[in-house]
Length: 270
Image (cartoon, rainbow, N blue to C red; front, top):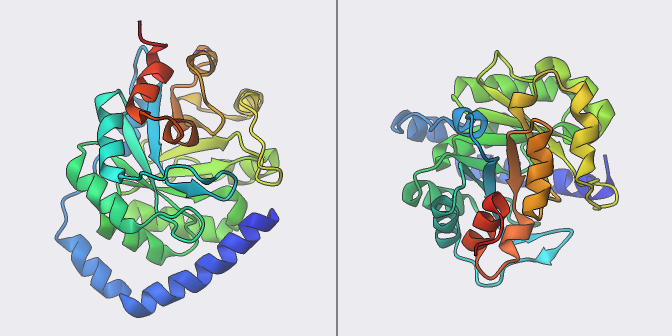
């Protein structure tokens, strides 16, 4: 595990224990019991379309880029994404490293009629309860930070809560290790994400997804993540049979994230 991930996961374990002490799991379960069922994140992302399906990300900062968006209004940004063709929203909820909050996800879910992914460093089943109670329809699971037993426990927990999982990998070795669990418990529940960012160097390479394709049994559930900046990037991935991408930093750096999303999907406006 790269040093930055070691640091983040170590802090996350402390953070989760504090959260458990503040709000017991049973209280979260009671909140969840009163909620409607999740929106179908899987169906939104894998739908057949003439254009690529974009999961558009709301995030204020990252360890690699620092502060990305100073004038940060998560609901306004997510609404602009919806109006410009996003099929789903990814919301960063990590506070220390990404300046996110679970409240941002809840606000987006209430205001924007799209499925919402909790993007965080999920290492404990308690965080699945947090996510569902906050209104998440899906959660990110990062293969590089989870042992196999931990991953299986989280996949079971997510299934029980009817949450779609986006299982993310970067390294070939990680993909081979987690491949038996992709789509758990059966097709329609899980997506596979390939992160084009090398978490050791923080450099991105769009062709990383293309190189991994031969190892992926079902490309229809594949989401290419990171390093996607232009319409040409999207066309290249779509021509290889990739239906979905997750884009955040590029959009968040633009003066008008919604217009940037439209240009990414359709090319520049005349």
